[in-house]
Length: 413
Ligand code: LLP
Image (cartoon, rainbow, N blue to C red; front, top):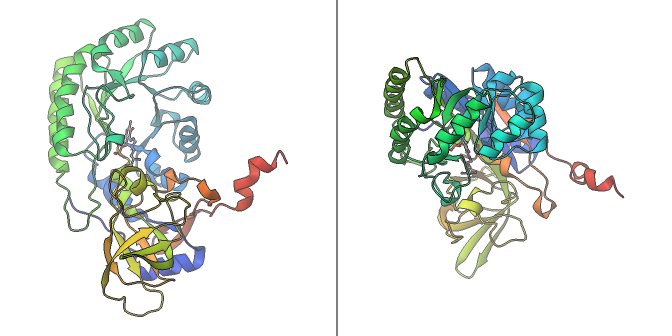
């Protein structure tokens, strides 16, 4: 599997920052298109919009034939706004909150249930929609323990041993179980993902004869480190599921569709977070670059110890200086506001060119779980999102304003 780099370069990044300020998110839709193309063999590609839910990205993905996942009432609203038909949306969450239940009922949105309580609540609300059951196969794996969604310590899905009883109850209540779904974690790898195949085949008899789809979940990895090829062979991954699909179709006597539900894989490499270096200082032997983006923008390094490639662009047209060991940190009143750290919070340095205040610092592969996990902590504003499409800069989200940040509080002043 190859890496896809963004097609804009330093010139465009400088231009976009001059135009819209820093920090900002800068996306290249071509990368997303290519990644969608990689998954075309699957019958249904359902985008896990939690990775990057901007409605402008969603509507473009809809035009490319994708279905969409929604984990909350808010994500249902986004999907509808982006023009998805209710039948193209699937609500997949651990609970129904009241707002979600109302929207599911109003639009007859198919749901993926993860507990018998969800089944009971659907029934009580008089909702009749096609059902998917999310199954915890008893194991999971992700790039960090925080994104492992299987096994006895995970809250997600229905425990595999309880599927049969739940399926029988659902049928008794008049629901049709169309789809079985598993998602063992995010940023997994071939070895772990391939274990799901036989687990899924073992689950099918418990689920019943009306199945028409198997959803293999998301979790497809991308390589964040430069020069390191991802060892995930997508062709092999598809073939493995395609063979399982044939066996399952034969055993239940009709054809089954294969669905995949990627988030990270489609968007991670499509976007950079561009920030400006605002201070360069020494702490004993350590050199710090302090930038105007923090974990309020990109939380992945602070939360998971996630690695993102970092580069620097000179603003003075001068050649960048020799490489030095630098620690990259943000503006927040919080010691963990460091982009170069490992899981557990160990701060590490990175080889970067010697830079000065005013240079741009670019954090790469920030498209998945980047902007969407931003917050207003320290009363910092949510950064704008700009799309690079057909060689033009298209704003797809404005920078938040102080007025917007205070809106709901000022209502009581
Ligand atoms: N399907 C379900 C049911 C999920 O819970 C998720 C991700 C996906 C699909 C998409 O997974 P992906 O293809 O993106 O691995 N914030 C973390 C990742 C959290 C993933 C949550 N669920 C991160 O920054 O790495």
